[in-house]
Image (cartoon, rainbow, N blue to C red; front, side, top):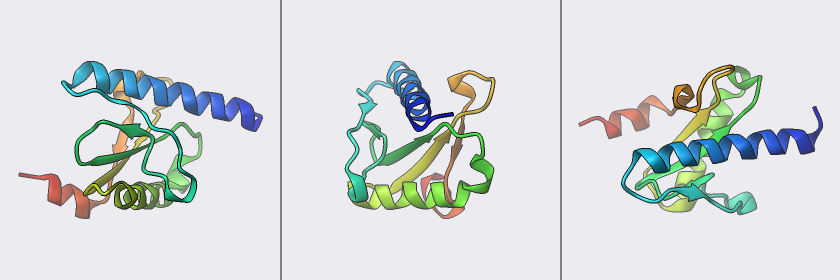
Length: 110
């Protein structure tokens, strides 16, 4: 698949995730413009979170780098938490995976 087709696929999934979150939560959620090396995640509006969204076939081999990217983007955004939303093949957007480090998960627990 061409890089243009991959970008469209990623953009489409980002939009689906944003629409899902926006419909489910009382705060406005939208796609964030990219900021290169100082990127702050793909979604803006979720309090305390930088959210990175991935629609890739080979995610399991890159999971660690995706989580590290989300945590770095949380730092860039000045928020405490980073997570990755990964498309689940042949399933609805609501069935996507959300992945974060155990260290951050423990901080979120009551």
